[in-house]
Amino acid sequence: MEIEFLDAKSSKSFGKCRVSGETTLQALKTEVQKLKPALTVHRQSLRLEPRGKPPKESETLKSLNVASGGKIYVRDLGPQISWKGVFLAEYAGPIFVYMLFFLRPSLIYSNADNPISQTAKIAAACWVGHYTKRLLETLFVHRFSHATMPLRNLFKNCSYYWAFAGYVAYHVNHPLFTEPSPALVYAGLATFVVSELGNFSIHILLRNLRPAGSNVRKIPVPDANPLTQLFNFVSCPNYTYEFLSWVGYTLMTSCIPAGLFAAAGMYQMTVWALGKHRNYKKEFKDYPKTRKAILPFVL
Image (cartoon, helix red, strand yellow):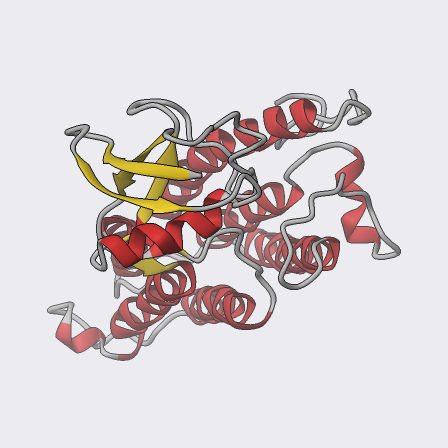
């Protein structure tokens, strides 16, 4: 059978190829790249209509009712970058930015003679520990459903993380920073550490849920690790723990910029959690009805 490829924006044809009805959309991307080398497989989105929703790449032409002489519309997603590359850049930056304020205060503040407070030292260790954990998870734990994302996301994501790193670091490491009470510092530290362990535990469970090299999806349930029991109450406990980490950091530093960072992160993670929660319920008919998206019993 013969298939014609058209540009999704202009509807102009840029070639045809001969394939079988069992050919998947993933395999078709290779044919598109042969016709138009600039359109690598990761840069393409294939669909049956110019503005239609792209089917799953595992779908075959036969399952999509595409007959000989059919048309496939190709959308150019623009320059791409690997998910791992974006994550490494956006997580390494906050460490560098934060430590610039912590290790070289004379470059930032005019009155940098005051010794760095004990709270600021603890906060720096927590900040570096958090982003080091993220870097290691990116390298050794996370499995990505997609190989790449649009290159523009690199600048957007890095701007968010790097700018907040500077905003928080400026205030926490300021020579005039006033330490909160020891009780508040250590309560915040305990919350931060437990939440970081919880977040890591959820990431390990999610990794084990999906075999390497596959897109298998299962309903996540708690394992023997008690920190994973949060799955009994929410669909995205990794986001719950992430938010609690920054709540702990905010308590520890009693710093408004840290609270704003926690609030901004919670807003974005809530959007993601609600979307994933809807997808879980749509995909799995037996999905637990008592689970919320990100906050137990609330949201």
